[in-house]
Image (tube, rainbow, N blue to C red; front, side):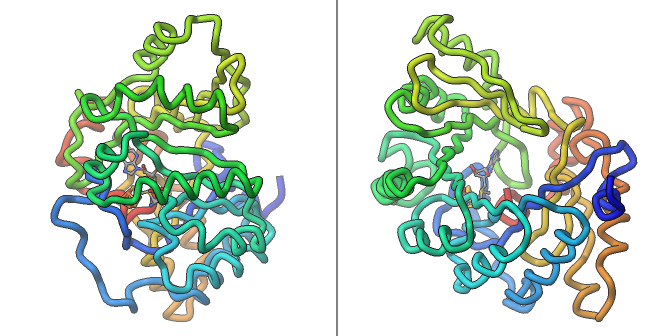
Length: 335
Ligand code: SAM
Ligand code: SF4
């Protein structure tokens, strides 16, 4: 192992080579499970990383051993200089990817290509226009679907993220899988996770085993198969035996995958979060602006990472609103 890679290793021996960067806290949708009903407090611009600062911090991470960067938010594409940032990051020696709600994708296809982005994740929680309007509190269903078509036609690898919630959209899991029969799409069923102000309740969660039981009922047990997951993959991957695409389950609530975690997060206001669920943060932007070296703080923060879900290691602690309420909401972390 090189010294550079070693510096992103925590006390449990996990190497962190995957950085998720939030480009902005703002968003053009209002998904109820992500944004609190009252919205988020909009802070002045100077609280957030400027393009040059973001690129400097990202370069420090790649010098230290990060090999993959995913852009997220908020909605990364609403940032006014999103194209400049994406193209700048495309110069770094990393695999670059993005997670977006898809609304503005048609304006960025060339930017993605020029930055070397090959894989795009789009959030689609339902295939029903009315229902999408209720979940996202906005009416962009047809635009999002047209942009998925565009990305497929342009040859991008497209993953679709669906947050599965009982009584909201869980009746569509089998329809989503059906979609992968005719299209080379990769659907990922994500368990609903608790964050500050997002109305999480344990009962709204649908476990992977329950979803698999429904698939067996609809398709028959011999019509889908388990695939081999890549190392550090948080998803358990499957496909229909005659499917062009795949589907997968991401189960941080019922089956945490912390022991192989290789992820860290940089918030839009320049804070390093060593875990999605840890309310602790390291202020990289503050150090950078005062002329300091951010590398020691990055090392310290990663070394101190908790073994499981930011210390919320039991189901009881994870479900405790006082404990998960100390964390930011999802749109200000960067999912
Ligand atoms: N705006 C972009 C989007 O929606 O894809 C990127 C940011 S969004 C916060 C990233 C991902 O987090 C989305 O796939 C979204 O569905 C997921 N997400 C947000 N809140 C969540 C929650 N409470 N539980 C599980 N996933 C959540
Ligand atoms: Fe916006 Fe994405 Fe959160 Fe929905 S999930 S409110 S699109 S940041």
